[in-house]
Image (tube, rainbow, N blue to C red):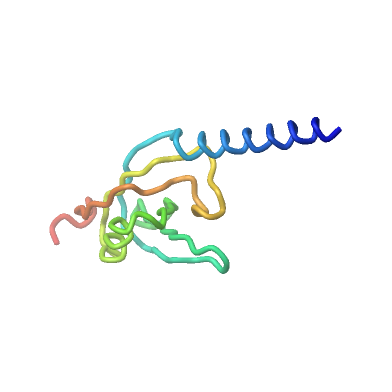
Length: 122
């Protein structure tokens, strides 16, 4: 019985490690999105995560929610500097997320300040 329990717990640990490796290393998709950065905050009670939103339309009807991993200090700094501006975000979409990574499946890897297509004359 002890031998079975040992193998069962070992198999559970291996499955969890493989699951974590798959989620963290294999992206579902990669791409870019542009819009006005309307929100960027560090939220949470026990585990703090960086969460943000960009508006992709004039009326704000299309909102893209994203997360930033805490280790990406450069991305966090650029997003804080560009709040309220039009930005182009490069992201990786994961199959799922963990509570200590963030609320969204979209993780920002790069930020560029961009020009709004709605107000080009300004």
